[in-house]
Picture 1 (cartoon, rainbow, N blue to C red):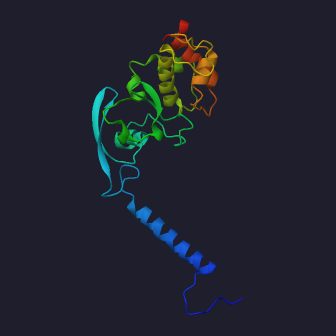
Picture 2: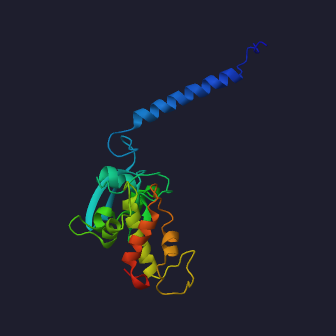
Picture 3: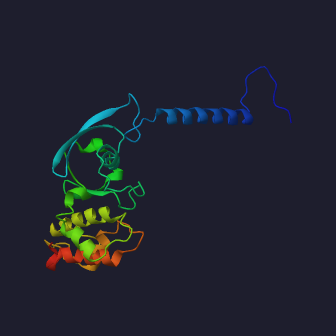
Length: 219
């Protein structure tokens, strides 16, 4: 079947495919050429912003693209690679850090949103010479295998113990009016459910957190 040949311009199905393919090629080329070395997603001459973070007890200043996540700022700009990039979609918990004492998935928030706030990463919880109690307990109870998820697990555990001490209930809390929530195995599993361990070291992780929680849910 022949295509219309009148003098007016007509977009045929074949023509539409050609236009779409050309537009996609131009867009792909532009995106690849725009990427700059350094901060992920940074564009030369693009929108950047200065950010100050109280990072592990020290004030740090950096300039980042406005679209840079807190996770990428920590890893790429500040070279704190203890915080891991797992799924990059907030589903695995490997990137968990403490923001003003509360746990947060650093892949789901922008660095520019936290100017002046306090951020604690796994590097700030303890040192090889003086381990945080949770770090020591994870070693004692073999709470890891490959270790990739461990920084996020430990930061999340520190946050969840603080939440329980503050009386913040979970889905499995029997008495939601309690001033301090007892740390049962069920509480730990529920509160740590956002942190995935591909090696399935969960029983040992629970045991490590239980040791630090101590009687009555206090560390």
